[in-house]
Image 1 (cartoon, helix red, strand yellow):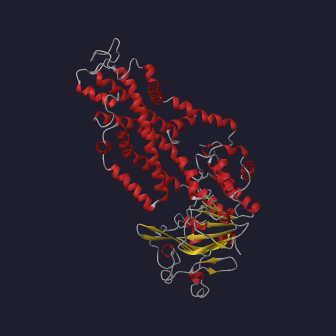
Image 2 (image 1 turned 180 degrees about the vertical axis):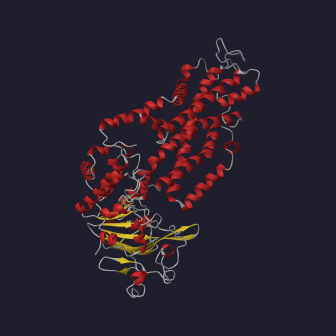
Image 3 (image 1 turned 60 degrees about the vertical axis):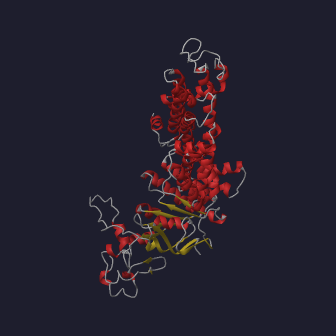
Length: 325
Length: 295
C-alpha cells in the first residue's frame, strides 16, 4: 500500500459565484523512497492539488489517505500529530520564511511542536538539520534576509525535515532559483529521498528537472491527470498527445537552431472547461468521440496509463491510423 | 539580498548601517531631539519654569522680554511658565490616549481578523460608523454629551481614534495569516492561535508602532482643539489649546496665543517626523536601507 493515496480528488473554488473546478478526479500514489514528478502548464491545477494533498484545501470530492488514515483538512486547531509527517515546501523561499524570526527558531518549531527534547537537544538537532541540507550550524542564529534564495530554500527544506516527515510535497521548489542553484537543490532532494526513505511529490513546470530526478511522472492538464508512468518510458514514448506536445516543446540544445513547435492555443479557463476530453480543442488528433465523452485513464502496462481515446483497448483497431507517433 | 557563504563577521556589518543610516536622516534627528526635549520639559517643568503657572504675580499683558521672556497674560500670569507646564498636560494625556486607543483598537482588530465572520462584521461596521464622521466633530459631540472636562476629552478621542488601529491590525492579521510562513508553521502542527501569537502579531507590531507615533501628534492636536473650543481643559489649567483660545480674545497682545500655538506646532511636528522616520527604519523595503546594503 502506498504511503499517500489520492483517490479521485476534486478541488473546487468559488469565484464570483461560479464554481471553478481546479482539480477534477485526480488520482496519485506516492511511495517511500521515490520521487514522483507532477508536470503541467501554469494554471492546470498543480498547486491546488499540492495544497489539497497536505490538507490546506478541503477536497470537494474524493479522498486522501496518508499512511492508512484519511487526511483531515486543516482547521483552526493544531494538526493531528501523525499528519505533521506530511510536509509542504513552497515555491518562493522569500515568502515562506518569517522575516522576523531566526532561522534556528523557525526550524526548531517543528521539533517544539512535536514536543521533542529539551532546549539544548533541540539546538543540536537544528544544527544537524542545517548540516543535512548543506548549511553551517552557525546559520541558526541569523535571519532569513541574510541568506540567498538557494540558501533559503535549503532552510525551508530543513524546516520541513524537522517534522520528521515521511512525505514532502514540493510546489515548484526550484522555479524561483537560478540555474546553478536549481541543480544543487535538485541533487539535495534526491539525496534526502534516498537517505531518509522519503516520498517526494515534485511539482514543476520545468520538464528538464523532473526528467532528471523523478522516478515516476504524472502529467496534468486542466485539472485532470492525463498520463502517468515511469519517467524514462514516459519520455521515450509518450502515450497522450498532450504529453507528446509538452516534450516536443522543450528546446533542444542540438545546435540545429530550430525552435520547438509550440502547442497551439492556451489553457482554457477552468471555470468553463471544454466538454468531453478537456484537451480536445488543442489536440492534433481529436476526432468525433473526443468532445462528447470524458476519456478514463486507460491502463497501458503495469505502471503506465493515459487518458486518451487513442489508447482505448476497445477501439485501437479503428483509430490505429490516427495513432500518436 | 544575497550573502553566499556568509561569515559571522558579516553579521555585525549588517547590523551597523541600521543605526548609522537612521542618523543620516536629518528629519529623524530633528524629530527625535524635539520630542525628547518636550518630554524632558514635561518632566522637569517645575525646575525650568520661572514662576508658578497659576500665580498672578505680575502686571497683566506685559510684552515679551525682561523678566518675562514670553510676556504675561491678561491675568498677569507668566506665559513661559504656562507653556512649559502645558507640556505636563498635553504630552502625558496624548500618550495615555494613544495607548488606550491602541489597546482597544489593536485588540478588537486582532479579534476581528482572527475570528472573521460575524465578529469581524460587528467590529468593522462599528469602526466604519466612527470613520463616517470627521474626528473632531464626533469628539465634540461626545464631550458635549459627557460634559466638558479634560478627562472626557481624552475619552472622546479614544472613541474616535481606536478604529484606525483596529483597521490596520485586522488587515495585517488577515494578510500575514495568508502568508506562506504562517501556513508552514500551521503544517508543522501549530494551532491557529499559536501561529497568531508567534508569527503574526510580531509582524504586526512594527506598522502599529509607526501608526501610534504618527497618531501622537494628531492626538495632541485634537486635544488642544477640544480645549480651544472650551470642551477640554478648563481654566485655569495652562493647556496649550486653551492658551490659544485666550490669545484670540486678546488678539492685539499676540504673545498670549502665539507661544502656546508654537508649542503645539513643534510637538506635532516632532512626533510626525519621528513616526515617518520610524516607518523608514522598520520598513525593509525603504530606500535608505537598500542603499546602505549596496555599500
